[in-house]
Length: 519
Image 1 (cartoon, rainbow, N blue to C red):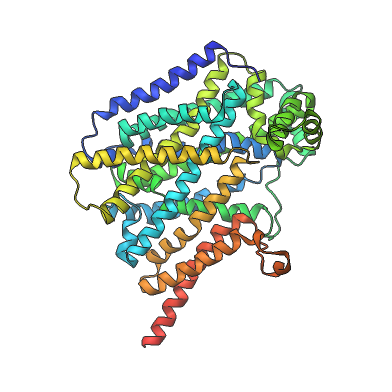
Image 2: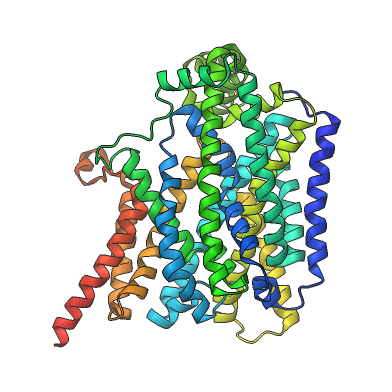
């Protein structure tokens, strides 16, 4: 891969410096923990909505979605189609609930409802989810920048991570939100620019792309049969609904935004603004993947370097060139989908524009990572440090604690990113990890809100039951062949669906049994 021209490197450097300066400008407003975590509730609803949208539209979307569309079809778009129903539930029930209780942490209420164990369990699940999410995004960013610059992936993670940590630590949630407003606009314009550039390089333009896409079933949303063993339409739709319900209802990244809005009504509006922008924006990335597929179908020889790179990564440094070439010849589009867009950018996009698009990709990752750092630090401070170590801290101590926690979680996200180097699909790995970690959280939360009669014992038994089911589904492939009949045959995306329903329904069952016992 060729290195970036000076003009592109300059554009990227200017963008990174600008983000850090925003953090510095807002640092003077952060005098206490409340200002750092909620901006004292002074952010307008439209800015909060764009911020939530920017968090949703991470580099997993920017890179992973075109990669999935290139390697398969539009099946993953069912995830976006599930958002309106989840948003309706959030705007009607979750936003008023959190605004009324007034707690900055999404998990404080679980302790009031079921006891300390419930809060601790949810916090652990959330923090593991955030580390996995930040790791997958760091990996996606470094994958792209390595293809464009030739720099080491670990070095790229270190540089981008340092910039994100700097402006997040200095500026708090207000810097995060306002940088995300800019980043949300930038990444959307970047996607539109990429669509235009790909189409303009395809002979025959849109008509050719449509013909190739139809011939190769690229516009399919997946099988419509009620088959939950493969990634069909209904599996992704169900996964999307439950994961978005978890995002809007239990994820500190989003719950914290509700408190930054000026009113309950503005907070609810921000959820809907995010959804109505995200759905067409995510469609853009599926279009990019299909356009790239058509382009490389017409120019297959241009992908030889990508195939060789993927083959070399799989075989390791000691592999002979003959082995690499032999493996490269067997690869299918799904094996190298995530690398195709970076390859197109570095080989086909004019100097100057590459820098702008790289900045858009950086913004896609940085917005979500900064949110994750700030939310993780807030949860650690509120639900772990103040709960178990020192309840009363002054303003100076509270800010120092949040600053240190932000840095620590940023570093943990970078480590997770390094560990993910070599995975086949960044979108797949993120979906699997988020489903596993979030599966138990949502069921417990819904049980606490909906079933007023469920007490501590019933909730604990239900959660243990749910965890056992999640572990069984997650590690079914490890069960020896002679016990194959006890393996789960359901698709991995069903883990959050089954885990959530198990905890909720088991909680209702145990509640009923308890009532019978004491009646």
